[in-house]
Length: 86
Image 1 (cartoon, rainbow, N blue to C red):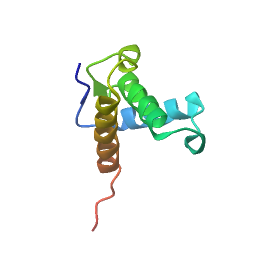
Image 2 (cartoon, rainbow, N blue to C red; image 1 turned 120 degrees about the horizontal axis):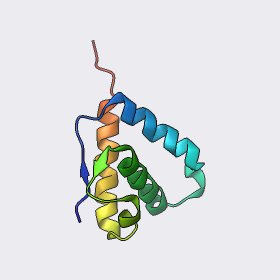
Image 3 (tube, helix red, strand yellow; image 1 turned 90 degrees about the vertical axis):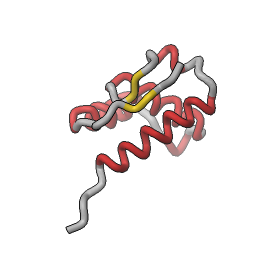
């Protein structure tokens, strides 16, 4: 199963992603990197930034596959939120 990034990321997806993180009550200061990556990927799937699996299926992928999807998600969010220099 391959989780892939859907591009381009739309504003509604970015807003839905961060709202879902808040709604989940995620406190990144009290969880491990693998937990944070898993939550991020599942929310990315939920809001349509990522595709290729359901949230439940994402729980059964290999940790390295999850970390790869997480990196792609983080890189894409960073790029989407980058303010162009004048």
